[in-house]
Structures are given as structure tokens and as C-alpha cells.
Length: 281
Image (tube, rainbow, N blue to C red; front, side, top):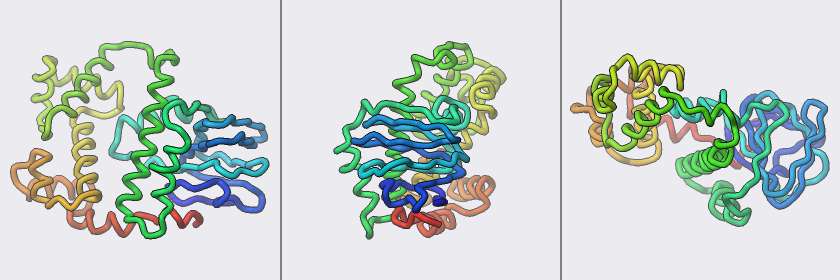
């Protein structure tokens, strides 16, 4: 049985042992590409048609039946989205990984040749920059999740329900995306939305399981980490982009929530990125 690392993507033929079994404690998505793929999950035979993304929940022992030439396996642990609360909600409680036997989504949004050219092949280059590799992997994964949700959102009852809380959080997230810096005073956003701070907190708590302040903190950390590990932007400039008047304030904020300084995080980020060509533990 093959045990996978924390995240990566690979041709299925490269990560199968003699028994053609894979067990992963995190989440995985099988892309069937141009062929039919046959799986055995919990003693149930699953047949996957060509051009399908098949979402497989955690702790699923999967056995592949027959040979594959083009199918690709994508895998990741939930920690990869620890600062992306919207994605965490959909991944842990949403439609993607609900069925223990997996869930199939037809690939109606990107041809096989484009996936190979723009996502798969670049990540398999031996001497590719690790930061570029991880960012490309995240972009590909988020693309799959977003497009799958867009296709299936209108068809699922719980996602069709319109609520006051959902409207508030949608407006709140839009406001965060529109403004260039963050304010850590919740009254600021409540006033912008013409609601009370308590109403904003209740709405975010209902939809995402945390306070509005915690949500803001997570989004600020998400942006900070993305800039620190994916760019060479000076830390002083990053602090200004986040809305901190002093670099020291940003450093204290970052250390409080990550137990390391921005410079330590940046130095560590590159060294901890795994090589996607090293598939096995």
C-alpha cells in the first residue's frame, strides 16, 4: 500500500504499488483524463468515465482495477487551506467530500490538453522553482473546487437556501475583497454594511463558525502568507498593504498568530515546500 505525502499531484501510474492500493489520511481528487477508471472503495466497485473529477474523502483505502495511462491523482490535507475559511467550510462540511464512496463531477470547464500544458507538466519539471510549484498546485486545486461548486451549487437544496446571514456574509466578503487594506475594528465593517457589530458577528458565526474578527484575522494572515512565501515584496511594504501603520505592529500581529516572525516564516516557507516529484514517504 502506498502512503502519500501531505500534498501533490502525479500520474496515477507513478504512485501505485504492486497491489495498486493507495491510502491517504487527507483529501484526494482523481482526474480520469481520457480513459475509464475503475476503483474499489470499501469493497464497492466504482466506474469513472473519461473527463471526470472524482472527489475521494479522507481515510479511504482505494484500490485501482486495471491499467491507467493518463489518469492523474491530486491529494492534499486540510491544513493547506487553514487560512482560507470559505474553502475550509466547503471542503469539511460541503458537497465535495460528503459521500464516503466519492463524488463525480464531469470536467466541463477545461480540456485535457490544457490541464496537461498549464498545470500537470509544469509541476513535474525537475528543476522548477518550489514556490512556483506550490502556487501552481494551489491555483489548480482552487480552480477545480470553484468550478465544481459553480456547476453543482444550484442543484443542491442546502446551497439554494437564501438566508439573511448568507446575504450579510456575502456582502462582508465582497467588502473585504474590494478594499485594499484591512481594518481590525469590526465596527468599521458593520457601519459600512449598515448593520450592528453583533449582527455581523452572528452572521459570520452562523456561516463560518467563527467571529467576524477571527475571519478578518484569517484573511489578513492568508494575504500576508501569500505575499511572504510567493513574492519578494519587502516586509515593510507588506505591512502597509495589510493596513498596519508600523512594520513592528504587523510583526507582532503575525508572531501572535503564527509563533514566528514574518522573516522567519518567509525563510521557512521555501525550505518546507516538498518536491512534487518525490511522491512517496
